[in-house]
Image (spheres, rainbow, N blue to C red):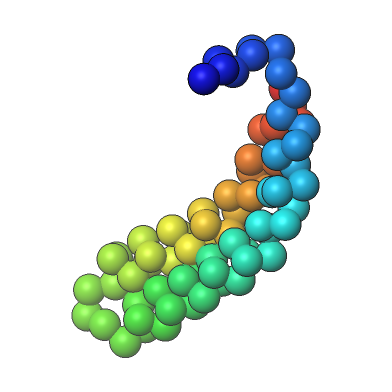
Length: 72
């Protein structure tokens, strides 16, 4: 087993993140829309708004990770 070299470049991760951007965006969009739709129809709305925020975070994850990797 080799240890991870601290000076090793993380650039090979960028193409993987680019490939995963569209599936993550679509999944996050679906989760967000389901959460917002259920929030309209229910008495207690906060859990469904939380689901919508979670969907937004799923959609934003590849973009945020790519930005963090580029800052290094």
